[in-house]
Image 1 (cartoon, rainbow, N blue to C red):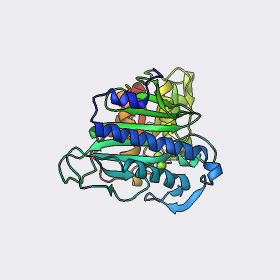
Image 2: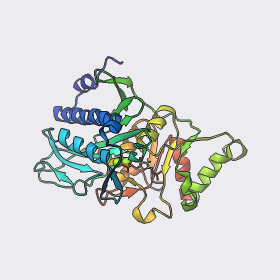
Image 3: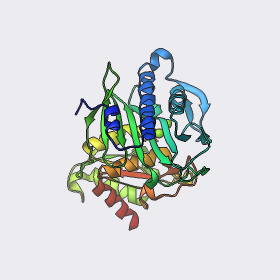
Length: 323
Ligand SMILES: O=P(O)(O)OC[C@H]1O[C@](O)(COP(=O)(O)O)[C@@H](O)[C@@H]1O
Ligand SMILES: [Mg+2]
Ligand SMILES: [Mg+2]
């Protein structure tokens, strides 16, 4: 498998050549960002940029650099019509949209609070298509995604991709810089005993989330009758990669402190791409009330509650939200 590079994998597929160009440009952006992350301390890029983004969050220098690399490299893609980035308030239109053109949604650097402490960060992306000539609507639900993925800048750099069927994991080979297929057909293990949530928010949680987490913590003494483990890395990419590898459930639910904002994570470039990956890998993704990809978006930076991972755990959480 490792002799299959991303380029070979894509050229052997039946994809539109312009989509292949775009995916290769996204992968190139991630390769450049991986180097910037790795060299951040030398280049003085780890700190705050002194600016805030559209969500009112303090931007890191690397948030802005990563956004600029996506913009610079992907703008070369001939059929890319628009970019929707976490770091840019307005949609960036590159051309007059024509039917079939591509729309790229991305979180250039995810988990950027981890930069200063040298822990894993990532990039997240999704691609949709323009429906008709001149149509500037970028607010389609996640079922319209034709491609989604993420890069993980961890001990090794990985590029995880789906073009609508399997979820394939590529590892960047040190030296050549090639992304090689190392994790074909990734599937979320069905059985799991691991949950990920920022437990410092316990006092804000709604009853269904408290019930679920309390039951996990009770372990073999409670209704679950088995021990559970907990992890929280504060980088969604790292959490989702762990869940794709060894199972588990990830929650950033709506709570009394974030409900007015809609939740914490952003629908178009965090929740939707990860929901597509997790569903195609056999898992499930919900707000607790609605499948994430069924949400009709109201804005490019909309926030939503997120519960995703192993199917049986997500279904249990959804059932608790119904009672
Ligand atoms: O700091 P908290 O509240 O635990 O939030 C962590 C969450 O925020 C995020 O870092 C948001 O991503 P950004 O770094 O792109 O803003 C997620 O990756 C992560 O799951
Ligand atoms: Mg993010
Ligand atoms: Mg980000």
